[in-house]
Length: 319
Image (tube, rainbow, N blue to C red):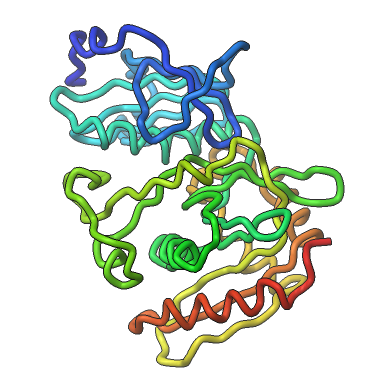
């Protein structure tokens, strides 16, 4: 591995953060995260060092860039870093020489933290959320479904953003609550013009090789969880049909909901399928699920948001 020991000398103290409902102690400075004063043992410790080199090989002795098990996770991102997550409480990052530091941080915040959560038997969802009444409304969907654009548009109408891209649910009494990930949105360049939220800045690019830019919402970020009042599932249709909306129940709701765990492909190898299905069943029991299909080849964001606003308050609050 092209690891350079001089990288260690860049980090002289631990930094403490809150993200995904967890406290994190890190040798790396994460400007994306909310700093905290930590008076107890952190949930997760992040250090710079050498990752294990004996997990990548499969039975044919060919190198892999991803290793998954219930307690260990190893990811190699060429040109950026390797990430080793263990037992739900430890991450070692081994950076490449001259790697982009934004990219190093981004793959930790997405892939490695997803592994940490699964190791802790927690189920991150691929969703964004806004505050509404005494809880939040959650938007689930694949990458490109319009979750971030939807919540960014709702923000222009006076709503406050709770989380972008990832939320971590848990059962509390007779309802579902979620933790936010961290207070940064990742928006494509054309989104800034599409919904008139100002200009993007090149220094806010999240990685050098993609035209996606950060937008922070620290003023509305909360380290406290919030109750989920409703869930909208956003899906794109290949047809030219107008927006279609439907309340889902039972098996139909389950079939849609099961697609939106964050890093869904990790679930089997990390042995969290039981926890995953238990969480889905709890969500179905306690939260109304609304499905919206919209044409993929049309800009319908303003019509979509108008429809969502109508249904947010028209449907019952979660049971």
